[in-house]
Image (cartoon, rainbow, N blue to C red; front, side, top):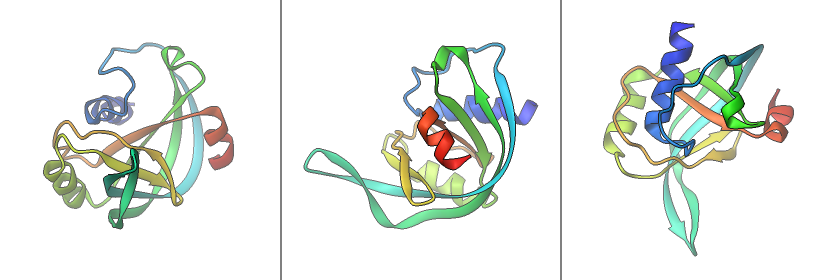
Amino acid sequence: MKHLLLSIISTAIVAISTGGCVEKSNPKITEVDRNLKISINQTEIKNGTVTPVSPALLEETVHISNLVHYAENGDSVTVPFYFSNVEKYSEITGNNIEKQIAISINGKIIATPTVKMQLNNGACSVLLSPEQVSELF
């Protein structure tokens, strides 16, 4: 549970556009057992649209064990996870402060957050819509 909360707080710092770091209470946690391919790419803006730049800065298959639902997020679900290549993730976040990155799951862009600080623990999470949750889980 401690790692889960750390992951959620770390992601708020990465700025997945959930309104900042707000204390949230009484989450509903759903246990899952799924491996997903997660990629992080640098981005560029083409014709007003954020697009990922290839190749991926980091691509890993990560294990997802929990989906976290906070009432404050409406129907959206937080998916916390950890990259095993902690050094590379730390390097990516450190080199891209105040830059937008793309986070993809199974080849589909899920989020384009602006990195706010270097993260040294491999923790990341994304906020998914109910449709995305149904598709992936």
